[in-house]
Image (cartoon, rainbow, N blue to C red; front, side):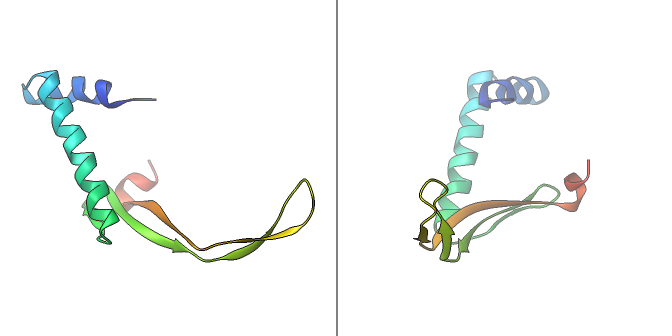
Length: 89
């Protein structure tokens, strides 16, 4: 798995900025994507994908231990749909 530090190293090498600056930009970018999606906006990065909130409908489920049917409430999920360019790599 690659984390922000590893991404920052790669970005710094490709752009000629320091790792500290690259890390700050990556963190700010992620924060802005999350803020926009939480406001109800879709974030479309052409060639990469779409970040959005989707509503998962309420449903009935079964507790595997007790076998009792329980009600699972509606919830909003943070989702990502990859672009066709990266979907099948």
